[in-house]
Length: 109
Image 1 (cartoon, rainbow, N blue to C red):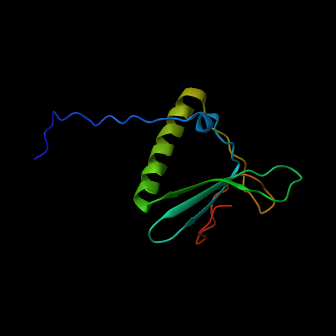
Image 2 (cartoon, helix red, strand yellow; image 1 turned 90 degrees about the vertical axis):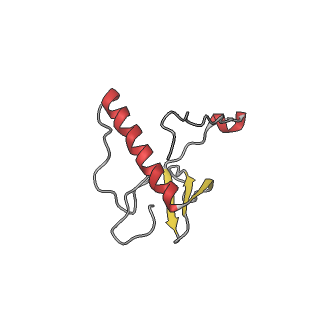
Image 3 (cartoon, one colour; image 1 turned 180 degrees about the horizontal axis):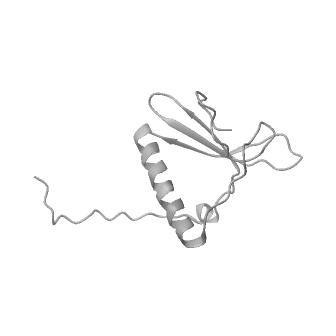
């Protein structure tokens, strides 16, 4: 039986100088296998037809689902403080940015 008075484990997270600068992304390509989700973050710039992946994140399906829940919780908190985040209508193949997948599609373009 778990001790109800047990303290939560504290984790120290180190943020390096380069990582603290961050990296802008307006496109993510998501693919998956039975064992993992792969998120390739890139950015598209007007007039440049080629995009380089700046960061690849690989997560287990369980961690991906936990990430989704944490992101939703943070978006809900943001919207309660600053108002609803407006998104563009239906996106097509000529639209840059994050897009919702089509049903049955394994990737987000």
